[in-house]
Image 1: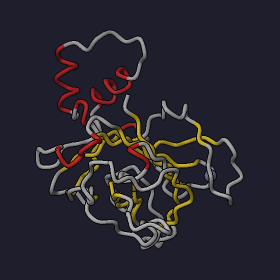
Image 2 (image 1 turned 135 degrees about the horizontal axis):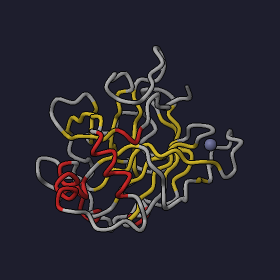
Image 3 (image 1 turned 120 degrees about the vertical axis):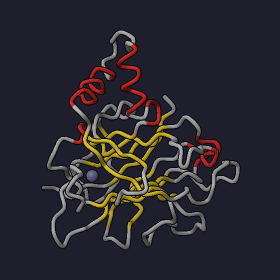
Length: 229
Ligand SMILES: [Zn+2]
């Protein structure tokens, strides 16, 4: 099982912000290397997935890296920066590529509000609706589907797996140690500008933006970018 791989289908899971969860959304960075060399502006910590959570689909190898950390450069590149990094250990990441400079014009909090989160399995009806929702020429949701969609989080649903429409499922991995020049991108999750304690103001300029986190399927470099679709 490759690093950060899943031993169950990621499509069947979603993230729920709630106090009981063992995963952590937001809060300060948890790794060395999250402030790029030559800069004093840190990446933003989005999510630390505890790989040892038996309820989650991610595979944990005993003694290996315990947490899958998701970072995004919210204060870089006028809102559209793309980031690639590798996870060296549970204490350190190494930035491989950051394509934007720090931007003073971006309205964003220095640290996202912290909350615990849980990973839960979708019900049969939720998986069916999720797959139906992705179909490009599907009819509008009926009222029962709309209610189910809202229960899953609606526009704020945090779903795992799937595919990256922006990168068409492929990524140009910038890791010099990687042999893939145009490799497959495995989606980890897409995190919309979700509310924390009912509030979304902290997202500033990033209202209605989706943050995408994928893995180079060859070297496990993490690729983070955003879309406004
Ligand atoms: Zn790679």
